[in-house]
Image (cartoon, rainbow, N blue to C red; front, side, top):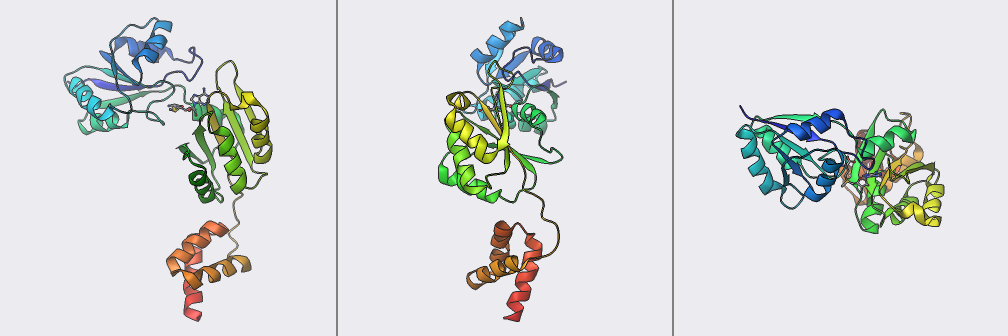
Length: 280
Ligand code: SAM
């Protein structure tokens, strides 16, 4: 019988945020695959867990996964952990889970802390639908392009950001999104200096600029979705934008660009573009 792979969430700050089940699994498995073995050893010491550790990080995970799957096929149980929170979420582990599944090995999650879910749960923004964007691009121009593509996004969206870039990211956002858009900056969740700020983009960005402490630690940023456009058909302005674009672009490109500019549905714009082209 092959063993089982357990994907185990670990705390994102407060070491007490670790379930009894997670502790038992880490004790019981034959080996723990950890992103940083020294880091995980500290967590294990805190919870009096002693077990064998092997390393599986961003730079060795393809090679390491092959060896781990061989161990699983040999009947050993393995736990996968990352430095903080839920593995695979902006963390290593995808190749291992994929390879294990390809070999018919059972993969079980041991749920627990996750920075984005913790932040969302306390943010007070609608969560019927949300989009997780991981980490943002690192350069200003790529970030602004990224924000541009999301101006009309109606779901709540959420991303991870580092202390080095939090101020620049909010500044770039302010150049692209309306300044009254609600934004939540959640820093150092579950830790001593936990801070959750919710305000307009302009205010939050100013606060992060003014207060040195607001640029320290680990961050989750959540952005309110754009107001949903009522399905009332194209406005005169939408049609004007489309007509201008059609002078330079194909129907398909004009419709796609107009959708980005106006927030209207691409399908509707495509049909209108066909009508305009047929009239010309
Ligand atoms: N797998 C982790 C999870 O489940 O949240 C995330 C790993 S990712 C490499 C690390 C990023 O998550 C940090 O740069 C930060 O953006 C966010 N993060 C992790 N812990 C956090 C905390 N305590 N407070 C706020 N953000 C945190």
